[in-house]
Length: 380
Image (cartoon, helix red, strand yellow):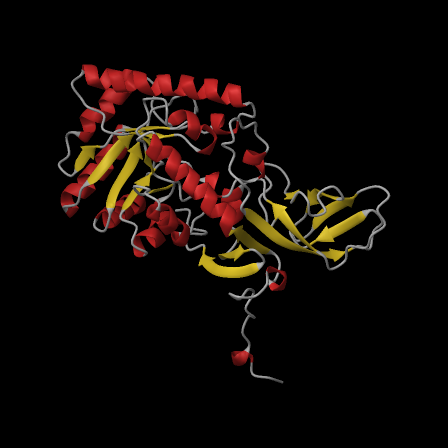
């Protein structure tokens, strides 16, 4: 018997290889489409004088964050404290934690990170301010604090001027904390299918955010930043006159859910994220079974789609098991697909990316780069 100490996992993808040699399942990134999407969002925000702070929860990769920063992004958003660490380690210097956090462990992480980067965080309760304020005072660091206001999401964020005033006043008590502005995010409207309805909903949300800005101004408090928005409303948020910064994430990938929406005026980003899959069984008539199941794709926003033009009219992904994806073969098609490879478009990019260790970036038909998904699994 051989010595198991010499047993190593084979390399799944190599730079310079054709994409057809990448072991499946694999998370593929079409670099041409990715670069075009990143460039267009950068140009959109620059044209309207609005800062771009992409949300890294969508990709969880410091390599992608660096590409976004190179195009003029002012920093990134992270959703969890631990998620920020790999980005800090790779030199990202401005991070906004666009979510509330509670607990001594989370406060300790915020204080530690603030020693390395310009850090801003969200709050929607005075107890959160107190815990953070006491910790930063002892540590001698500074953190910008953004009260989150509910502009229609109905999830986190305070509702009402009095609640906002209480947070702003409490922030002012602590030396080391500063009022950074407002977090104003309405995630639900990002996924409204109709372009007109999405535009209308974005206008209502922006008006709600503007009311809070006006309330603070009447109290003599300037609001330097209003941050929020996302991929689905970016084109409206940048022209609102309210948002000074937007937080889109999925635009670099354009997953199946966003791709199914109504887009007007040519703004729709291109699909750049795919899952390479191999058909592993054709034992049942009318069905093909591929190697991408629930452990390889998130299905909370719908089942993955077969890339148009590539068996798209002959194979339809109809069910996901742990390790198996079931595809229905179009009636009358007697072709045996065993061993053939598919590109699948995930319904929701964020949780799908969290399932993989790296992006296999390709240009044409050749693997050009391997980018680690270095923040995967960091949800504390």
